[in-house]
Each structure stands twice: as C-alpha cells, then as structure tokens.
Image (tube, rainbow, N blue to C red; front, side, top):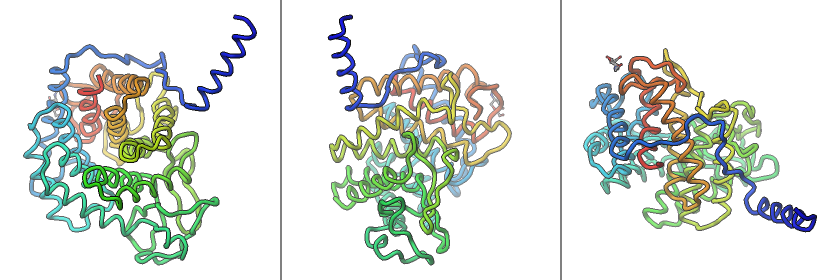
Amino acid sequence: MSIKSLISTVVIGLVTCGAAAQDLGVPTSWRKFGNSRPLSERVSIAQNGINTILPQLNTGNAQFNGIGYWQSGNVFSALANQDYYAKTTTNKANVINNLNKAFSLYSNYDQYGWWATSALYAYRVYKDNNMLSHAVATWNRVNAFVITTSNAASGSMSGKSFTLQGSCGGTTMAGAVFWRPTSDDQGVNSITTGLFITLSAYLAEITGDAKYKNAAILSATWIQNHNIANNIVLDSVNAHDCSKSATSFTFTYNSGKYIEGLSVLSTITGDSKWTNLMLNIVAAAVKSSLWQGSDGIISEGASPNSNNDGVGFKAVFIRGLLEAFSRSSNSDLRILIHSYVDVQYNALLDLAASGNNYSSNWHGPSQGFTTWGQLAALDVLVAAVVAN
Ligand SMILES: *[C@@H]1O[C@H](CO)[C@@H](O)[C@H](O)[C@H]1NC(C)=O
C-alpha cells in the first residue's frame, strides 16, 4: 500500500469513526452464534417453554407461583410477543384475561410499568382496547412521579417531602422518574425511567398524541445526560443530593429497556440522534464483560436454587434487543443481535435444558423446573423465533 493510499485509508477510517463510533462486529470468541433450526421448530420450542410455566399461573390473581409480581408481569410480555412474532393466537385468552384481572385487582399496583408494557404488547398483537386503557392508566399514574421542568426549577414536587436538586453535574434533572411513590424516597432510576420512555414512545406511536412523544424525549434526554458510562446504562441517582450508584452496580435490563425505548423513539421522531445512541448502547452492552465472558453467554442472574430480582433482568435485555432488531434495517445491527440471541438460545438448548425446563444458569447444568428459570428463558425462545 502506498503512503498516499494509506493516508486516505486512515482519513476514511476516521470519518467513518466520526459517523459511527460503535463496533457492530460479531466477536468470534462467542459460542455458537448461528442456528439452523427451521421456523416451525423455533415456534414450537418457544410455545413449549410457555406451556411449561402455565401450570404455575394462579388465575385468581394473575400471578405465577415462585416469582414476584413484577416478574409475573414479564411472563405476559413473552406470551403476547410469542403470538405477535409467530403470528398465532395461542396465548391470547391467557394474556387478556389475566391482564384484565391484574388491573382490576390492584389499583395503583403498577408503579414500575411492567404490567402496562405487557398490556401494550398485548394491544399490538390483539388490538384489544382494554389493553390500551390499562397502559394509559399506568402512564397517567407514573407521570405524576416524573420530575418536570418546573419541578426542577422550583426544587420541589407534590408527593415528595424533600428538596430536589434542579440539576446535577450541570444538566437538568427534568425527565427522571422516581421508582417508589413513598414521599421520602429520593431515588430516581434508569429502569423506571426507561419503562416510562418505552411506554410513552409506544403510546405516541399508537395515538399520535404529542404529549407522549415529548415525555419520551424528556426522559430519554435525562438518561443520556445523567446515567450512562462507557455506553452502558447505570442504575440510579439520588434526586435530593445527586449521588449516584456505583458504576459496578450495573444490570443488563437498564441498557435493555433503554435500547427498546430508543428504538421506538427513533421510529416516532426519525431523529438519528436517538438511533446513534441506541447503536452505541447495543454495541457496548452485548459485548460487556460486566455480565458475560468471552463466550458471550449471559451469566447475570444465574440462581439455580432460589428466585431473586436479578434472575429476570436478562430477559428484559433480550426483549429490548429484539425490538431494536425488528425495527432496524441496519444489517450490521441485525446480524449482531441475531448472533447474540443465538448464543443465548444455543446455550439454553445445549447446556441448560432438561426437556422444556430451563435453568436460570445459562451455562448449565440443566435441572428440574423452576418458575424463575423458565421466566428468564422465555424471551430468548421468543426472540429466536424472529431474529433468525
Ligand atoms: C421438568 O421439571 C419437572 C418439575 O421438576 C419434572 O417433573 C419433569 O420431569 C422435568 N422434565 C424433564 C424432561 O426433565
């Protein structure tokens, strides 16, 4: 190569870097990042995984034995998305009846937005207007816990008994969402804010109402300004004193839910700012040593003997990646997400499966059924239906 062409290669490289700093290449150290199972088999594997958790469903309260209420809300996401992507209605009655049950039993139950997001996936596939109403009711409820521009200016908001910092690190705290309604709880966090972004962006897409789009942009801007390090979404900030959770206190679902919200926000705004941010976070998150080794198999939330909140985080991450895959025409992004999903899929099937039972430890060994292990697996099984 001549010096002249070397220089021009370097210049082109720099220009390319400026436009898209992220590396969307697939690491060759990943374990089995391809798949040759036909669609019909992938649909069966996912539905069999769902059928294996259903005996734990208590239709009297819409909960699954062995997992917590927010995790139960996530099971219905997987059921609705399976029908959406497999183009079936197998899970419709379970989804509609149990979401209606949950929303009728628990007033203000859903401060975290999980059940409302499930209701939106249900609306997307079944077009049942009650599902949309549940999502709107939750949006109205959570919206009261969002720091508005005027709350940030006054340093106070109704429902909270302490002084707010209007800005932290020089940028406004507007858009952050409190994760607990308790009046003295000072924490705002990425998962509650990410769920609100996602809920708002989907509602904007469905209804065309600008208030939802503006809410999604305000909250997406808050995470962008306050809670990202090295393109990984961090956990929480104290709205009273600006202190932050440690950068090591990091979980897949924070990045996953933000990726999902940004994907929908990219669609509804057409603003490449959000698309580029989403690409940066996907590229970092699927290769992060915070939750996986060089084989690429997620090791977060591996808990064979007991449930804990962390078990379901990786399912939320995979669900967010699937939304990004489905909405994007960027072939590098789609190949990366397809490969990452197949790494998890092959790990589950090769290392962690006993029949249709899946361990929450995706490296294995396989074990008998646990509700939390099954919950964690479902989104991977559903993602593999489409991301192949
Ligand atoms: C799945 O788990 C259930 C409950 O532990 C058990 O009865 C069943 O035999 C398991 N299936 C396989 C194939 O291991």
